[in-house]
Length: 317
Image 1 (cartoon, rainbow, N blue to C red):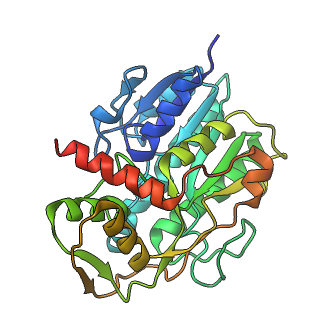
Image 2 (image 1 turned 90 degrees about the horizontal axis):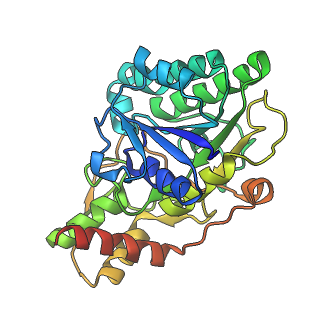
């Protein structure tokens, strides 16, 4: 019988690519998404879509009774600015939503492994020097990062107290096809659309803040690998946490220049004030995931940006 997977937030940017990767590997895939930010069109034809809020009792019932081998918990509020403006709303989705899933997993007769999407940028804060290693001290700069770290602590607790199997994947800055050009987290998508419109690229601060950009298809492959691989015993923070990135810092100005080059569009660059809660530097060390999952990113930044720009250009018809 084919393995059975649930993806919360599976109609979103990253979740839908995980659905693609799992279907390619022979999984039965169920997507749970309230479509508040995800899109029905993102869900591949071979997956079942359940339109539910991850905090609801109905969602908990699906997790508990669905007979899943693995649950990929992707559902989240991902905008750092929104978390700063309304930390209560952020925690409601990112902490209470996760707890609803974990309690349902604990109650399930057939307990699935949980693969949790955390953050390899916001969780470490600006008090360590990149590339960040999994056991570095963590001091998030935003409520978004705090919520992700809180769920990691809950996962460690559930591992110790209830034997729950979990893997934490700390994503660097994910980009690629289907990224939301309206969302704060999607700078590549935002830049692609502004290039297509012939509008200036807006850079916040001095543009020297760095990020580790990893392609969404590489991230989906990491999730698929995390579903079944044998790992050290759960129960302590960081033991089953792995960074997912390239280990390469790229500043926003370099990103903008690379996109201008691959697109062939020479638009202006405008500068705007620094945003509250934004980190100055972020990149992750990836030795652990290479060692434990055998995973390495397959796409260079230039190739990935070209693919992403071409995707957005094609959606314009």
